[in-house]
Length: 115
Image 1 (spheres, rainbow, N blue to C red):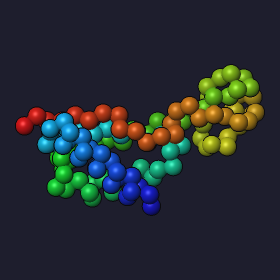
Image 2: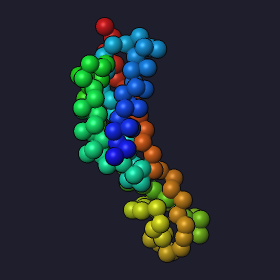
Image 3: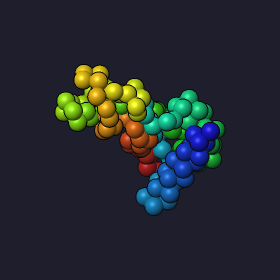
Image 4: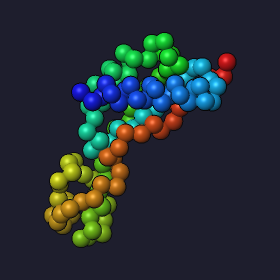
């Protein structure tokens, strides 16, 4: 269950930013976990909610966007939606599709409260 490790890293990263940028409270944290990121979003959400007590994220609204992955087909030179990494192109049925989005976990934005 690597979601616990990911949640620990996210909390540590935000806490480090709080020290560096001199804020004490986060109002909103928005993450993106693409459909090819290999992340169980429910488990990540649960892990984050379990870890934020006593941190600058304790009162934060945490949202996790789950965008559909997009791949590039070099055969028909088109971007197409991907369900899995080994999917063929839905237009020409050729391989491989190269993921161009939806394959990462990202911090999209962070809104902090000045105190």
